[in-house]
Image 1 (cartoon, each protein chain N blue to C red):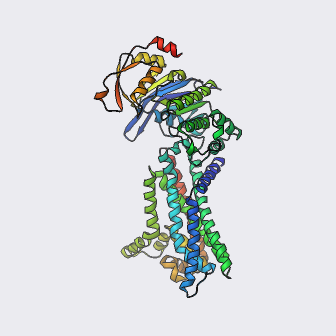
Image 2: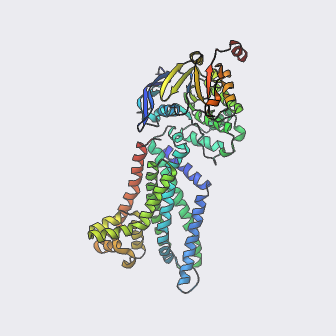
Image 3: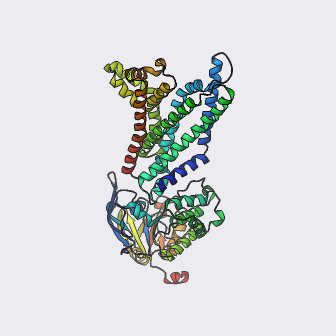
Length: 274
Length: 280
């Protein structure tokens, strides 16, 4: 594990010394503050919203941005090193391939999670000072769910990176995956439902195929289990198994998504040329 | 128990898809010797080194200090220090940080970082970023990183190919010092400059096959009287001719105009014993 942690620390150091981590943290902070402020304006008075409303406002935005950051950065990890010629050098050290992959995975996921936490942390402190409502627990829970999604998407990015010869190819695949899971998934599913009369178990299975959808439904169930905003999959799940069971099923699926992509990435990395 | 050879390669073969890049390569390297792997672009030099490192799948058998790289790659790599053709450090890392990272991976004490900087004559550049180093300094840093854990075998992939003659001389001096400490060195190169001072043995690769194995003197005797088309790999024809003379392989440029600018036709001639004695 020493080598894994050494590589992970190096990834974090590289991220801190580059500009992307700071830019990402600043972007998140500004979006969190901006959404809170503008949300209150739309309700008729100017000022900051409380944590719950801010969290709900941020949900959809985070479900777009966090996967994008994790997928693109994850996709560059192996393919970028391969393109620069640094991968062979790293593999020339007395290491197993899984140690290299695990170190990069941990380091990247920790870096993106750190930037996200920094951004949300700063925004949280500002909002807490401006409002009387202190629903910090909800805010922290939401942050934890976003970090779980980051871990999943970093793993998927790494798997894409492991099969790509160039960074551009990996980035292209990452953008395609992001477009499908963030935008096209619902449309594809609606089309499938229309074409095949899918319902019940099929809908639930489809929900579990998309980690973004899992986190979205899980977050709404925890924040405000409103059937209107849960969407058809979430509504079906809540009505069929109830809130507690839905939470267990979705959490288990999320854990599976955290383990599966990086396992596949490791297998692909082992079987590919340096 | 010490193995008979530092490096043993038996019937090494390697294909990328349908392209055969190495075919039935067999050679042994004695402990403490220096072997030059000579060949043009695409001859298979880098692939051979990657097979020795065990970082790509291959056919045949490779042992480094008696450890098979195919089945025990991690253990074999403990015995190997590697210098890639292009130094692979982060541009933003300082020299000390770059070496510390390798020291951590190889589980050697931080005191070796100071030793490595001193060996590379880079103590004064310890806090300088790698991106600010000259090409020669980077290669010396890479060589120091390769020697950091005191491995018995060093694999150097065209370490001097992009260096000017002054930096090349410095690097060769450093390689010579490490060889003097008993390291077994395999270096790939297409530059013959100073090779006879370093290499006990020359292996010439031609399109993935071992075309020659012997000493620099034997190579010189073999090529005498023959004509060759030489790929200059960006070197000037004048530099290449000088390098041949320095290596004790006098040759005459025959028909440069009939060939592309990066190639020239050479006719190897009898070596001049007086010139060799003068250099010695």
